[in-house]
Length: 231
Image (cartoon, rainbow, N blue to C red; front, top):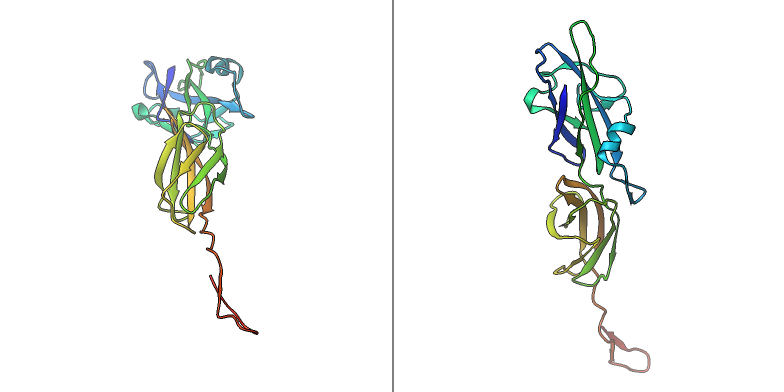
């Protein structure tokens, strides 16, 4: 088979399309896949895609449902999605995946693996969302950057933990200043990394704005046994 084409990345999926060359329609194919993170232990992985294809082959295969498994699954070009391809799913974010294919005929005689095709899932999710400089109307959102290949970060905000998130802004630094908030109100945030491969998973956190310090206390109506305290 020719080189596999890899497109349409998300955080956990890639779409691969076989190149059947000139094989007849009854020919079956098995799809091998290998992978390595773009960042390991906070540092950029120095292995190139070419090195992955040569040294990190793992005898893992795409299954009929698009997941990765240990056994080869044989299907025709049509069953593998034809020109539309197949969605490989359950993948890890911020990871380079390399695909290649081998073919077999009706006598189960197999070819060698063809040329590789590679794709990278969207960036790793940030982590450790924290808040500083909290006031009645402002706060600063901070997080840990876990990817080395992001273009920037999207910061989403909501008044509910599970719904209603809207884009508050974007930044290239792992910190974002938020203003125009309401006093004594809890705000929920989600932060994602993005690049040309798409938008990764989110990290989340929430914080409540502060309230004003009470004004000076005044005293009135004092006598020998009572006094009135006014805030």
